[in-house]
Image (cartoon, rainbow, N blue to C red; front, side, top):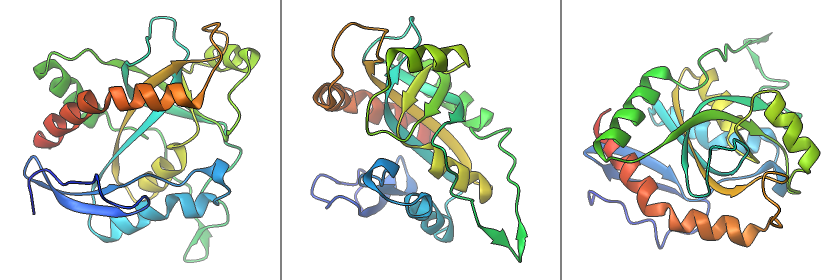
Amino acid sequence: MEDQPDVSSAPPGQLVFGKLAGKNVVGMEGRFHYYEGYTMQQIALPVWVMRRLGASVLIVSNACGGMNPQHRTGDILIIEDHINLMGANPLLGMTDNGAVKFVDMTQAYSGRLREKLDAAAEKLQMMVRHGVYLGTTGPSYETPAEIKAFAWVGADAVGMSTVPEVIIARYHNIEVAGISCITNLAAGITSKKLSHEEVLEVGKATQDKLGKLLTEFISML
């Protein structure tokens, strides 16, 4: 395997295997979203597969809208916790030997891994933020009133993914590190009209920065 897996030609939805910073890794080329009509169980299926493959650490990344007035477009946010407002849970109806398994989410995002992300960012002299991610279903963007309510309950960023994968990872006792790219400021934080094109543009512009952070972080594991 090459040290840097080339995912540029991989069809969307594929798992890509390789080595990064000397570690065996498997990455998802894209992800499934609840707003696309997939079930929570389908969204979380890749995490089940990764667990079967022996994964012990899951790194989740996403594009999100920033709600914290101190944050700026293009900032990298290390997720400390999340709020699930997706109205569903991938564990619904699931039993373990006939009994419901209640999963502890106290450490949904590993403090140990957050410390390593901070150390990687410091080594790269890269500024990163910390905060709480709030998950909604989408695909409509949030109203200014919703953003005000989300900020009031303690969220710093809002997006339409990530939460289902993290819940299943914790079900399997997989450590999770979460990273968000603030690709736009949420409704009411800015007077600009929100657009998916802006999200894609900013996300593409931050790819190199995120790639360097992840490579350094993985080298520390």
